[in-house]
Amino acid sequence: MSPASVALLIAINFLIQMTDVVFDGRLQHMIASETRATVASVRGVSVELWGILTFLAMGNIVGEGAFRVGFLAFGGVLVCVGLVYTAWMVPLLIPRTPRPESV
Image 1 (cartoon, rainbow, N blue to C red):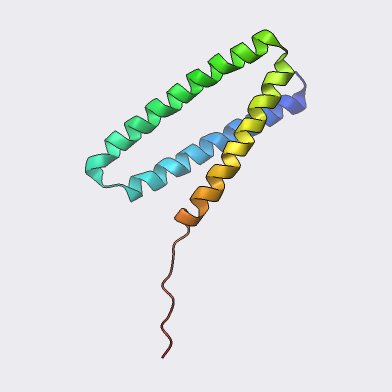
Image 2 (image 1 turned 135 degrees about the horizontal axis):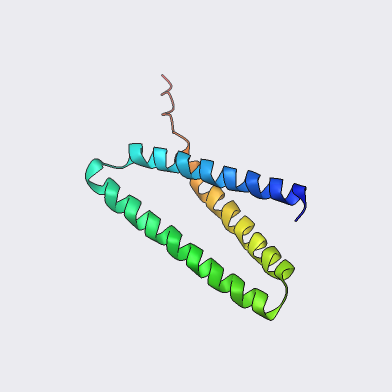
């Protein structure tokens, strides 16, 4: 593994962890305290299940072909999912200010 690829993996992992911390912080402020633990638990379980399914799918793809094909396939899927999620969530996260009424 080249030093550039290790640096890229470290940078991506840092960005993912930073996004997770920011998301958790915003989640804590948006949800009432009586439902916060349930939402956090469901989120944690869904992240773990997604990880397990990703490893299983990656194993099946790589078992039939090469690592490069698997990484490119999952990279493309993750980019597409990220773009769709961003397009869906950004309008929800931007605070809306009421328009001033004209007199």
